[in-house]
Image 1 (cartoon, rainbow, N blue to C red):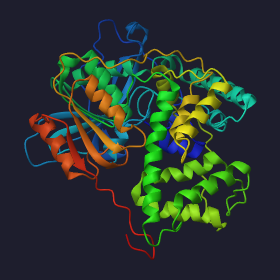
Image 2 (cartoon, one colour; image 1 turned 90 degrees about the vertical axis):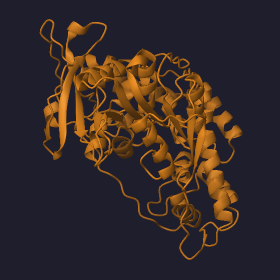
Image 3 (spheres, rainbow, N blue to C red; image 1 turned 180 degrees about the vertical axis):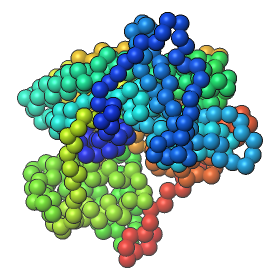
Image 4 (cartoon, helix red, strand yellow; image 1 turned 45 degrees about the vertical axis):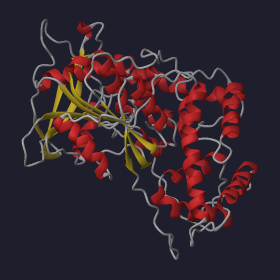
Length: 493
């Protein structure tokens, strides 16, 4: 899961994880299949134009499953053949999360498995699939009001959201209103049929876990193996439940950072790191904290964005140095990306707003939420992920995938993974999903957002035993964290 409301350069690069749509895709096309045609039977794999060692393809799926004769859209796929010397088992469908993450790019970026052909898919609206398109200036205008400070700014954000939605819907066409994850589940089932190998093997990270959870609800008998790493809890239905979970994870990780700094020779903040950060927060709120490189003021939320590096122990020395530079007025460089002018693939907006509803009726409710978070988590007070709560307000987008507890019956054993210090898909959510699905939980006792295939041999061994041999853990298991902050320059740890 990624924030919907970041400044434009980061939002385009990181939050959607989708490239700007190519000019050839600027006009969204819908086709009507011939009567009786099976648009999801077989896949015509061809070498990818930009990666001939990877196979690419598209399949057609209904635009609207309730009215399948209203036309089709394309779903983009990429395949990396099984990389190991042993026997190939089948295909493994993969999605990296988002909302708006590209499985095609995941495969092109080198994700492979020794026993499976890895097939990455772009969910509808994303990247090589028929795209959602929006004016980046309107994306920027909405996200520029990420933290309204009064009623007028709150209303301005709602108006900006409404303008953005109208533009995206006009540019995209009817696809815009058929983007919820329940519909993506139907696309996944069409992909499974097109692969033609029987039951589904699926690996979903972050937002991709919601796709897997809801596929297991709809098609429990069509699963061979399913790994869900960094789970979302679609049963959360209030803004406070969301904000408190996200802020608690950030608070815990920042507290670990300050404890490390206080006991590590060479940490740039020296002893009393928590007190130093309190002073920075005070300066930010009173308007006396400035970026020494630009002279521009640094407000509380900009400071929080810097402090968010506490979620990554390998960055703790750099975070301490950055906070010390702000405290001491030491200049440091800042790089700004150039704004985009072409229509941008911003599928996160309709996906998120059709999947979630967190009512925040007015500015008073928004301020109360911020006050509650500051009281409950007095060190960090807020998480950038909480800004998602503003993203759907005023859009008028209909929620077509209502929240509710997970209800899976008669599925085979699934493998649920949670990272203890995950700052995005927080560990309690994975615990809830495991409990609701009546599954065991595999916990990585480290940091970061999702873990399989990244750093832990322990996690990889358990997951691969499950994927290859269907050897499912018989009880909850944990793997030790491997996240160790480097020694600061001139110090030891």
